[in-house]
Length: 260
Length: 379
Image (cartoon, rainbow over all chains, first blue to last red; front, side, top):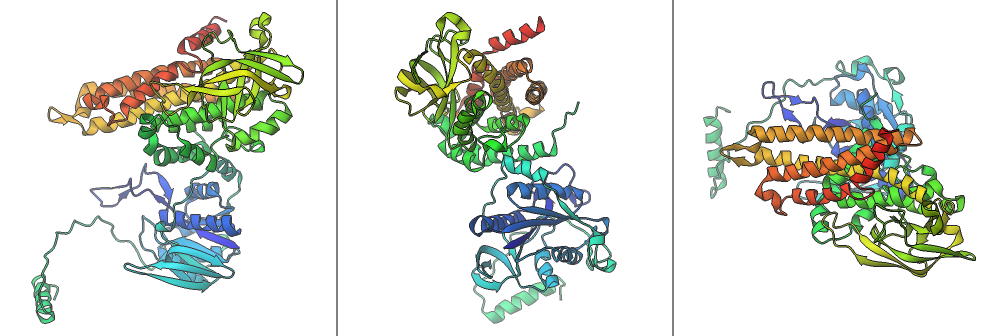
């Protein structure tokens, strides 16, 4: 079985501070890690490799320093690593990112693609499902449990107050939650091996994509501003109203706040 | 001269630090209070292949360089000196001499199992009357046909009680003095071998430290390590390599103490402000941080020397001497900065101070290190 795991190198947002003047993240000096949801996805792939045999390829789209994240994945036990990197890919939003990654993944043999649910620096949760759409394969997101039997995957998909059990035929894509498992540590010998392996690089020239679909040009969305939300007040609890009274109350409040 | 670690060494440090924080630190106080050998950590060392870090993959090791291994001991010691003792005695003292001096058959029989952690290793030189005066060996080994018969005892042996193999030293020819000492590989099941009482210690209380008893112990001839009479030089070479590990341990203890203390003085308030705002605190910290950084450079230099040169006794001795005295000094001053709370077991600093002391004693006392260093100075 061939598994492709997509990972992202992110700043460790536990340690990141917000610049009080600009309201943006201060990334300088902050250590980089493999995005936690992605790491859980990688661990899931490695467990499948341990239990039923699989070739695990880990892939990331990023600047040259993203190579460190790939080395860490290799040191955990991934077989192969691919870095999708080019200045032309820079400035991409989730749409352009997913388009680029899908084009790269298409060059690899895969039965199963695993991505993380969302990155701790972007928090959109869009790239995984978008990759699946680009590749025209089914996707199951928010995986809390993954089983593989023959050509099928069975996934426990998390909801707020319940879960679904979904079955899909491979090839397909799964997005993983960090709750899926506790990722293994690297081993010291694994680190030695990881630095001896060659990381395959995929650049703009290797991909069958249009300039208008990648990078900043290919991004229909633009981040205007990021800021920390001001803390909300506790709110007012209004109870014991019938539905008419409740509707009147809400209408009153909306008018009060000039929303309508 | 490059003062930077390689990307590989940095990644290894991240692994060791992560592992130490998550797996070792939560147990540290408990194993000290209960004087308990951390068998669960030993299991994790096996699982994550930490038991043969500086040894080649050919033997089941990780294939890392010496500095990477010492960084592992440094990171472990920041949170738990006992755990580092367990690993360094196994790796540097229990495995190294067999790999270096063993016959192909001995290496095949023991080294792989030691590197994978299937076997735990130990080293036994010290006797009741042979500490620093290690050549005064009273344990005797007499050749009798196809085996040696050993009689005597060893004390203060780390990992005893959990070890599968021991590198033992015994007198085969008293008339030759130093050159009459030989080394043997003894398995725990050899007839006539037993582990005696457990020592109660000031620090590294979770480390297993027992007496070994040889009563007509039968050791097959094939288990002579190196040649007869070469035991003393094997012991000294082993200790040279082991003492860099103790330097790493002492360094880690000092660094761990500083981490805890910097955290403490930032939040502890007296006279209306944090202790960190007082100049005495600042100057103490500045002094200790500088000293510890200097100790780190000496330790790293010794680790690199081990891989680059056949003889590195001078570097190893300097590293151990300075790191151990730094650990003792830093932990004492850090405890003082904690004040009354530092004296209680609610904070880890008192354990760190108790743990630091042994680094000035075992694997060659600080006085022995001075003997080595001055010998080189007067050459």
